Amino acid sequence: EAQVTQNPRYLITVTGKKLTVTCSQNMNHEYMSWYRQDPGLGLRQIYYSMNVEVTDKGDVPEGYKVSRKEKRNFPLILESPSPNQTSLYFCASSIQGGGYGYTFGSGTRLTVV
Amino acid sequence: AQSVTQPDIHITVSEGASLELRCNYSYGATPYLFWYVQSPGQGLQLLLKYFSGDTLVQGIKGFEAEFKRSQSSFNLRKPSVHWSDAAEYFCAVGDLANAGGTSYGKLTFGQGTILTVHP
Image (cartoon, rainbow over all chains, first blue to last red; front, side):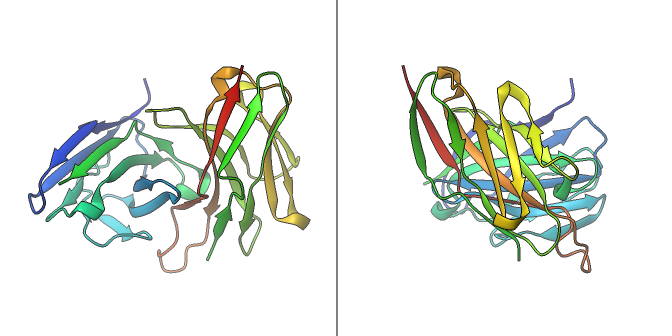
């Protein structure tokens, strides 16, 4: 089944403790992206990647890192999480680019205390 | 920069009633437009998309949307709402520009509209 898989689905962590949210897609898509969803703000793009080793900032990149060492994987790294990064995170992939629409994962609900 | 506005934060309709969710966009060229739905606790599912051609687009679950360039709108409609349609709906505009790689790959979302369906 074609899908974007994120792990974990739920995560509670403490301020400052580094964490990684994994994302993998099995559709051989070139483009991948991370979004965060907050009430009243919709989804905002954090980072996106156009291909292996090619990444760029979205609208809200501060406090996040990404890497794209393999085509199928696009992990999101929070080096020093803070409570304002408590959010619902979505990974997405696209064969032609986000402008053509994304396929989304099921989301990761992160709570930073 | 592109943007999307969904004027209605929350809409309540009765089951069987018709539905229209509003979406206005700002984009410098012909936009690629999308509607996604998010059921509680779920990810986002694509309902329909507009790239070009016929301005009335049919999607899944009986939804349709109409692109009106003169009004910069892409409203979502359904003639008869079912209780299972209760969800949050997001309009989005795709950016196809590639100005030094700074905007390619960008899909910009509106704030979302929560739909409640009364029996």
